[in-house]
Amino acid sequence: MFTGIVESVGAVVALKPSEGCTRIVVEEPRVAGGVGLGDSVSVNGACLTVAEVAGSRVAFDAVRETLERTALAQLREGSRVNLERAMRADARLDGHIVQGHVDGTGRVRELRTRAEDVQLFVDCEPDFAGWLVEKGSVAIDGVSLTVVGVESAGFDVALIPHTLAVTTLGELEPGRPVNLEADVLGKYVKRYLERILPGPPEGPDDAESRPR
Image: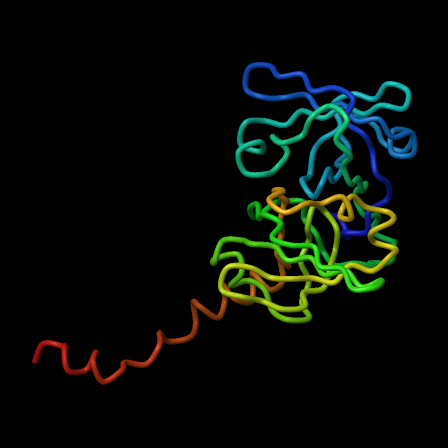
């Protein structure tokens, strides 16, 4: 479990494909010094397990399923990634509940800058957009953000200067894939309501077409 409050940004120093998975080696002393084998770390929003720690470097194994469902397959040596260790039970929840279970990927449509205000527009699948609400929460590459507006196949968020300074979001460009995770509480509520509420009311055309 994570909060979407990025602890640090690391650099990918090696990618080692093998049968069925790819080992991702990230250099970041702060995280490397605070994790052990088997610990969970959010890497650009995807929950990965620490497979090796060597000095200032941490290695993770991303299986084929993870690579196919996230944007991690787009990483290259030198790529910068957002990192967050698993949340402590006695810590403040400053962001929102983030599982690190990426729901899918979106693509950056635009980064719109006006003075110090930066608005990030992301295209996504309609099903993902259906989980979002204005002023609700969303995680983009592991960063907890507040939704400003929602469209049928996209949404936008506002990025404050601090977020731009301590995450990789300020480096995004149009067309860049990003990992997306909707608020898990919202997903459960939506699923529950779909199960207990009746379907949409019949329109006049439906009533006329029904067999008699």
